[in-house]
Image (cartoon, rainbow, N blue to C red; front, side, top):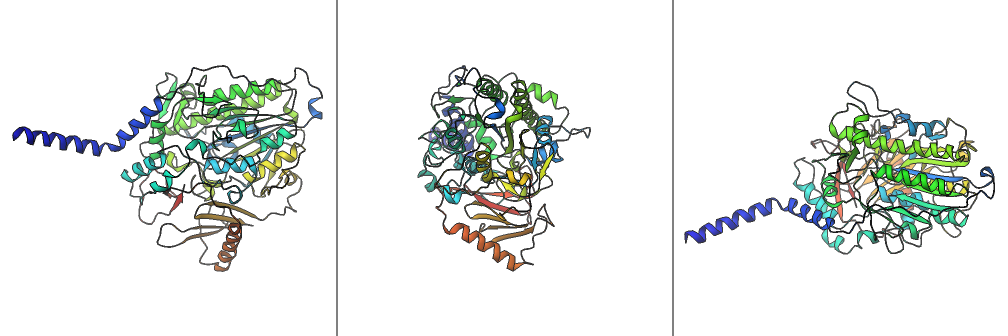
Length: 558
């Protein structure tokens, strides 16, 4: 009897420990599964080689085009916009490469991402079309990510309302590699390829890896594709890591991600990058430029930095100086690597005699993320990635083209990621696809005349969370939580940082803008994949801070 009782006690203790550690066990299983993916050693990338001599002078052919996109870079993270990360002695960590690009070209002072999360923004960069046309409305997520993030989120002691997860929706979704932009959509790469450009993609894609949705199937002659998200192996002797115990996404990423990429093979045939991811992609970008300098080329360099997981090289970590806390210092070091990448691209163009007739455009896919726990990242704007306050949507957009754009030019008219595709197509001397509705506009005429710009309205949406900017008025509506419709109305001319919600004072303006949203939705095709998770996000606090009654927050679906 005593043995039976002892056995029951042991079983009960084991069961309790297993239940209490279930999340950690699941994360360990995810990590174990990822470790079994075959990844080969680093190898040389066989980029296509252009002609050995130029058939025409550089200035007589269409301009080369380089589109550089950072990931989750905050508006206040770069010094050219008046920001930069502060050191303990009060000095500011500078971003000289990005600053140089801005100073030598045009700065769009009111530039917006296509969405408050990465993948829909990238779809709009490539197509010039809203999600209401493409259906690409939510960000693809790897298997088990949403369930694990919701689980960890609801176990945290941060006082926030619960994350809501619907497993039945997720079970019916396509796999992560197939949650992509339909192959029928026409990308910027396809348009430029028709014009005679060599097209190369390096880095993040996030628009589907397989099923004819990978970049090498969507108009890019060559693609060095990010198939995993570590910048270096976690235990590499040259890496400095910063883990975020308050962030469920970070916990999942450290368990799920490996260190790999692929070349023209989607998610298949993975191999290790040769060194720290940001620097490696820059190395390969330089090779692309040098190999194709005698023909028009389009290079889409889609950096992962400074997206989590936070990893920097020890060299960059030491170089940025004394910055606290540790995660901010690692984050600054990651930005240093992105900034160095921009510098190296500009220097290579000069060395190869290509600078004058090459367009270099720099932007970020959305605003800085609150889950990193860095409260100044989007200052002076409110909100973060995953919200559609200005902090989640305002991004840098700098364009350098010495042959056509005077240094130091500024534009105050609002522009957005939907404008990138038609703008670069026009610069290349080609039209947008026939029979395809393009929502963006060529913004090059704004460099000469802002008075006759015809567009007054921009739209954003993420399921039930919808936003319109019409003139200087911006309306946000959200029907979660279930206790009523959230409505925010701001006059951005008087209140550019969205401090004063005037929806109750201007009901007629709310109705006018809601009708614009309704008209925008009237012919929408609906999302390709339904959202399975709803996450509450504080507007004025990072995830490192506690939620208190009265703090404003939104539920956003994915």
